[in-house]
Image (cartoon, rainbow, N blue to C red):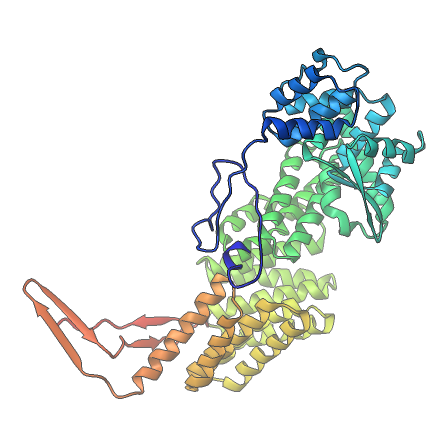
Amino acid sequence: MAENASGGRILLLAAYRPGYRPPWMDKSHAGQTLLHPLSRDHSIHVARSVLRAGRLIDLVTEEIVAKADGNPFFLEQLALHAGEARGLRSDLMVPNTIHDVVMARIDRLPEETKQLLQIASVIGREFSFRLLRAVWGERSPLEALLNELSHLEFVYERVETEGSVHVFRHALTQETAYGSLLERHRRAYHGAAGHALEALYGGRADEVSELLALHYGRSDEAEKSVDYAIQAAEKSQRRWANSEALAYFGDALHRLDIMPDTQANRLRRIDAVIKQAEVKFALGRHAEHIQALEEIRGFVDETDDPRRRATWHYWIGFLHSLTGGRPEVAIEHCREAADIASAAALDEIDAFAASCLAQVYVITGGLREAVEAGERALTRFETLGNLWWASRTIWHLHPAAQSLGDWETSLRYCRRAFEHGATLGDLRIKVVGLWRMGAVYIHQGDLERGLQCCNKALAFGPLPYDAAMAKALRGYGKSRKAESMPASPISVNQSPGSRALACATPARVMPCGSPRGIFVAAIMPLPDL
């Protein structure tokens, strides 16, 4: 925001600690102001405003001011600490760090109030009244204890449409309360929070899968922690939060490493590896994932679950086709996946296998086989309403039709994918549809329309890969356009010991009839003069 705020009537205030330098500080519209510690007079004013007591002893105030060293938060907490004491004596000002001060205030709470604060700290910086009540159970009335914590300024209430939410006034307060719990109590409360969330959300656990993964991951319920970590990873993947998804998958696998080697846990490990395929594919980590899939091959071969076995085969076949593996190996894996899915009547899995097989055939040059497999997959995906994978299948069908010279069919595929992207509200599908349309027009010879499609794709601010493809095709289109124009004269500037060539006609860029169905260009070097 700071990078792009110069054109708007916006004042952006950002606080940061000494030693950090914002990357936008050199901009002409940015400036900084040093926040000095509070002066002695201002510090006394803060302490008095917090204490609100006529019985303030000057000696205590002086000690608060001296120890806080102008830090407003430290001043506030020290003053609250003193004000909560039974007598304002100088020896109450012993704590030397802000953590010690907060801990001293927590220790002074009545036992039930302290326990409620600790349970709340397990739930998080913010916690809903419903969830806290579910974890607290049938003990003392919750409202009175929460009011006491609010009165003491540990938490404050925020009213929302779905009910009240309480928030720790400072993150340090939550961290200190959480750290004051014994490990076994902490794990028990995390488990209780997980069960409470499951009860509150019923069949909608996916909405809070991240919270469930966190709480069960810090409890003694290992199986639930793995299940919800995988669920949270899939949810992150759907949002293209790839790094976050891999972190959840990694948590699940690390937890499985210390769990018993049971059949159920082997199935969990298969899921945690196979379901990473989409993320690893998006990140280009193909070979790495092939290795991960090979490591669980024994577990896959032993299971009688056709869905897992078929999924393993089509993914490893698909990735082999992208990493220079032997074509027959990739084809065999995809066919095996299709046979397993067909025998088990798994229509969508069969479509996945057919789509991957289409990609393999495109790369190996089996263009008509690619169209046949791709059309079968496309029909099933569209029937099932899976427009995302329908679009991915089109990315295999489009280059096959283009390489066969069937321009109109290739264009129809691209338009179809663009419409799917519009239906899904998926910008990337629309971008890919545009630059692939541009590829068809340029190879067909309709250079102006092809360049327009590439420019439209780039105007959407695409991902780096799609931007590179659109720019490469646009460059190829411009070079073909330049070749169709009269050549400009060549001038040679030669100096002793060196030669230089200036030429207004670009180096020739020749499209290769690649069976891979991917845009390939060969740069023809100029002859040695």
